[in-house]
Image (cartoon, rainbow, N blue to C red; front, side, top):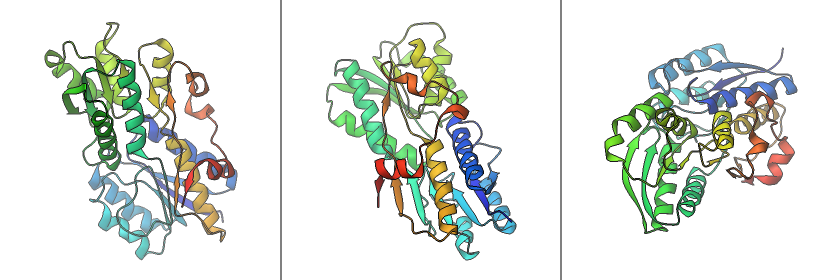
Length: 300
């Protein structure tokens, strides 16, 4: 019987996690294993993910590819994987409990600093900005906000007029931007902790001109917005490759191979000069091979 891999993602509303499911499935098919997806119906819902963890443990997969919806609140449930002897391979967000055998991710603080610095340079190193932060419970949100703050510390002539939480969700970001509109007249740029929130801002703006907007993740719709000139830039936070490599790590472990404990993917700012490489649906994007990732990533 083929090995079975349980794949946990945070929601169905963020296209980055759609990409992650594509990556896991594609790799599983190539390696001859089966995947089962465990996704909360309500985005990033702790109670639902705890129930899904308990269900997966009862169903006894051979391995788990896992990203927690909250830094700490699913820890007790996730410890059940270790207790059941089910190996865990984490991606996007490091688990803070248990013994994952390998983590695959990117440096959120560094990529956030890079995209913020890119934006600040584009507005001439001075001005007022609006920040849309991600989900407070998410480790990626905390790290990205720190990256923004590091970039701000290096650009003393950039000030933050307003920083609000958009929950990493498009509809939430749209409403937050709409509600704050009277406080944002004359701002010079908008810095969003993911592409989905940037798209929410663009939705609300419609065809009207406005200050430049950047995001993070390089999802296909953001790439289309860059091509159209409505969005300035994004960063390739590659959840598809992360889940693909985490899934392959699980299979390699089951076959008896020794693995690195951490694989950190390189990141790249995507703008009007280089978006063509990313301008395709997730299903058409190519996941780099294991060897390619090991050659380019930071490994330990």
